[in-house]
Image 1: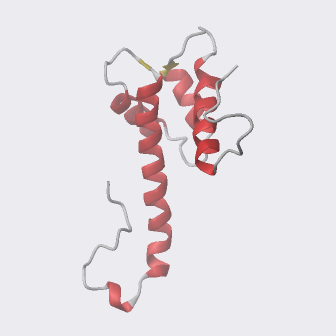
Image 2: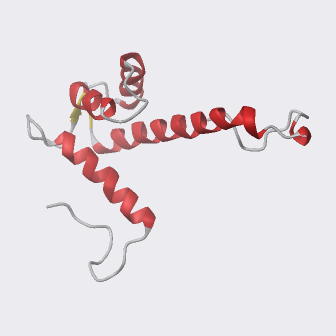
Length: 120
């Protein structure tokens, strides 16, 4: 039903598998009633609530509003990718916040940014 990113005879890379997974997750929710290739706010909310650490309604509303560029109340696939990008960036930043107090080295106290922490 869904097209693959690589030829069947070729072993898929981790990135290809991850991209295919993201596409399949989008379609899993976007093809519910009504059958279309969009995520309504309710479908988007349900998708994120089934994802760990993203069940806060305010967070979901803000993500949806930021991604719904044409303000039609639904996300097409390209808008969904924008949202997925924001979720991944937030998760990455949280992973550094969890480790920042444990990973502080004496040499890191000079105010230099080493690419860690909540930066967009």
